Image (cartoon, rainbow, N blue to C red; front, side, top):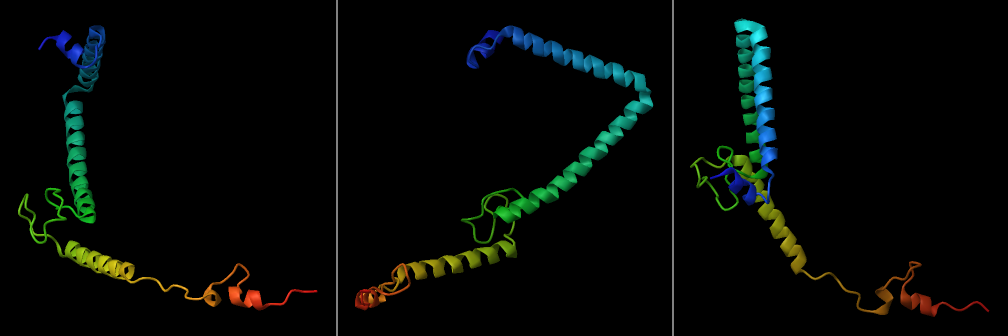
Length: 150
């Protein structure tokens, strides 16, 4: 693939933009190399240890947070597979669905069953004019019976 092909795929990227970005990357790498050479070998080793520790810490804490988010959303905590259609075992990785997710599914089914039952029974309707309230809180029939002031 030639550089002009890349430009034509992206809607006409100017080749000078690519050359400028390449020059910026080279300048940044050269600057980092100069800065690290000032630190000496112990400074470079210290930076590697600090960055390695930071990476390990972020990986461990992110993993627990990711598992928590997956569990809350109803996904497999190991692989992230959507478990809505899987009652007991994740079909992707084979891990067992936890009890909390099963409990939440059971509650959701009970609530949806109660909702459909409530929607299937019709609400009581007013059968006569006496049962229909007006804006003043009086029924239509009592409003009609009231005498007009003279």
